[in-house]
Image (tube, rainbow, N blue to C red):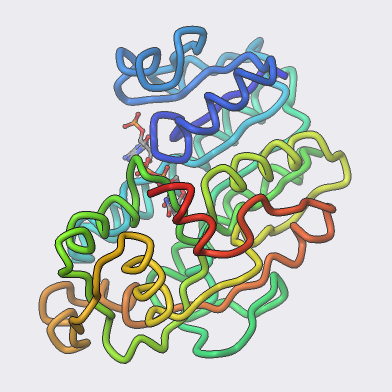
Length: 297
Ligand SMILES: NC(=O)c1ccc[n+]([C@@H]2O[C@H](COP(=O)([O-])OP(=O)(O)OC[C@H]3O[C@@H](n4cnc5c(N)ncnc54)[C@H](OP(=O)(O)O)[C@@H]3O)[C@@H](O)[C@H]2O)c1
């Protein structure tokens, strides 16, 4: 397949590129820094710097749309919220305008989202049928999904990747946690009862390949392993994988003080089930956290 990937230089995108190249696909990565694409994504990958390079005669069989400013890097001021929204929603709208104007339409459009769409779900088990939350993160995801969903009006098959915490030693949550846990400074967050829905990056990439290939796949997919875990259990599993104690607690009020509304990402959570992934017949390589951490650390 000829595949365009936005966000292809990111944590997930880089792993995806490597796997898709191995499987013989021809890749183009949209990046604000096209000079980095070959070194980050592979020598055979083409770079697209601007969506204006998507001409009427451009032909892609599939588009994977992951681009977006990092959610956790800065406090969610109203200016930052606009940046987070524009880098996902406005970019998706512009991409779909380009696709709409092109003579050749991709067969499938895979677009990012997050399990944060469900808001803070407490202990409730959440499948793809669960309702949308009310906080900023949930609304961001819902609006991003709605923008992507317009590809279906052009007869394109649309799959939405409702992504949980992606575990990869190279970056993301695991890299952030690794140093403090290695120094025995790992900490449970608040009462530790909030749920963490995670996925090994290798499973994530393999499911994306399933979604590209399965002509019947469409709609939202919870991209999470089948065994989510509470923050308390996650902390213990991580500490024991690194043979270190985790004796500390990060209190909720301190996190709220330091991070503002963004603290909800840590003090709240979602207990998510990958129901639609199970219906694809996909078998997880890493269904349990201990095995995933053993592989990654
Ligand atoms: N990793 C996770 O645990 C996780 C969980 C839930 C949801 N997600 C979502 O899944 C997507 C991919 O995640 P990731 O961890 O791979 O993200 P990442 O490492 O932060 O990479 C994001 C990519 O988006 C592009 N980007 C950032 N800001 C942009 C902007 N203003 N305009 C255009 N492109 C921009 C960057 O490409 P260039 O710098 O090359 O332009 C970068 O490669 C993100 O949207 C993320 O929110 C990730």
